[in-house]
Length: 94
Image (cartoon, rainbow, N blue to C red):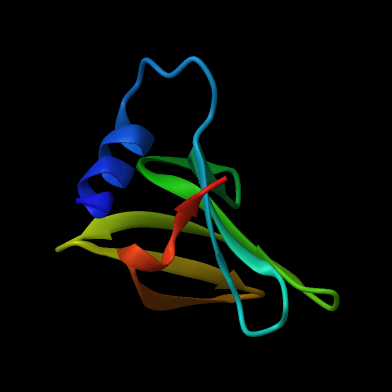
């Protein structure tokens, strides 16, 4: 149920304020899912939303969507992209 709510909240276009969902990462920071459209190298991806992760030592941006009830994030790591899949139940609203 949380997954359905997450998807509905983040993908509705008539939001009064941005929705943000987070989960802890292994570096002591967070993975953050936003409702903002994803941009990468000057291109806007209307079907993907912005994600980022951080710790004390690194910040990485990416684009995310929900596929088959899981959160798929394409992390932009310098000149390459890396796709990771996360359990939607791991994210909570901020």
